[in-house]
Image (tube, rainbow, N blue to C red):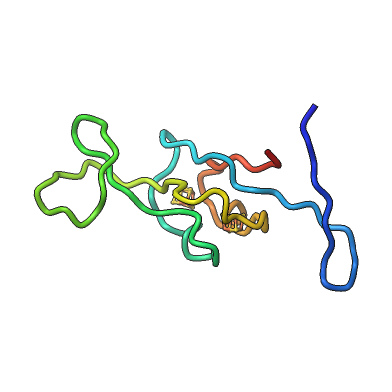
Length: 97
Ligand code: SF4
Ligand code: SF4
């Protein structure tokens, strides 16, 4: 059974946060749409090198095969789910955990 948390909006209506739990690296195209709508700095764009390793962007010595979005501060998520609505690849998992 999945745990849930009910909190409240400003005027007291019930609100169930839907936290970002995971981004599927095989599906993500690194478009950055989720990053743009998040105000909590939960995610960060990173690179995948030719050996499949996750690498920081901006290092000119490393050749990047593609970019993917990663979770870097999951604990800062407020569960607004704006990132899920912005994602064109449906590669995020949300819930309460
Ligand atoms: S659910 Fe909201 S706060 Fe959490 S990562 Fe997505 S946009 Fe950011
Ligand atoms: S919106 Fe979806 S496909 Fe685009 S970077 Fe975010 S998780 Fe990846």
